[in-house]
Amino acid sequence: MKQQNIKTEEQFMSHDIWISISAGVVCLLLSVYSLIKQDQHIEGLLTVGMSVFFYIIIIAIYITKADFPLKMYFKYAYKDEFLNNIDINAYKHTSFAFGFCLIAVFYKSDEIPSEVSHATMAILYLSIMLLVYGASLLWQSRD
Amino acid sequence: MQNNIAKFRKETGLSQQELADAISVSRKTISTVETNRFTPSVIIALKIAANFNMPVESLFILEEAD
Image 1 (cartoon, rainbow over the protein chains, first blue to last red):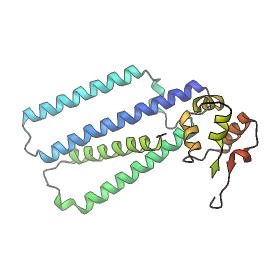
Image 2: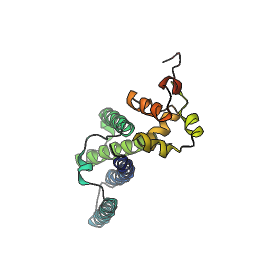
Image 3: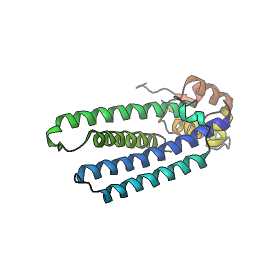
Image 4: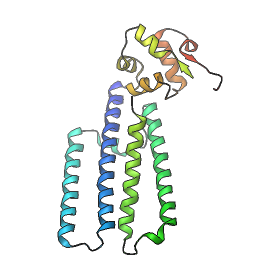
């Protein structure tokens, strides 16, 4: 395997980490906002919608500027042994976090207001998974 | 499992990136192997040993717990 490909994989993982963490934070804020503000007005929704829209634009610019080959986004495994290993571990951590989250919601379901939509809960699960995936990779790839 | 990779790498005056380039792995592979946070495959272990021109047993030391 060419060394250039390995360096590209390293850079790709670094981008992956920060995109996962930032997307996780945005999803978490979005879900917490929805959980707190049950009586949502159109002004509030517009502000949130515009913020998410701008975030997506920034991420799109970030990804475009990185200029990675498109096929890298659809690959299941890294060719470098260490990167592949920590990626698999991160998926395991993510699965555990999701399972733990589901169990917590199952046991605490009576405390969750009935107005909270499935979409809000789905975004909350997604945010936790993204945050755990990003944090796991960041922790494992430390020097 | 302990290893002497950092010691031999410094003796030969190589940086982690240079060693990584020589055996076609990421720099983080070298970094985490040196700090015993990642146990490499036989292939990587043999490549590192070949790079230093020494047997693999000189680089990696098994502990009683292994």
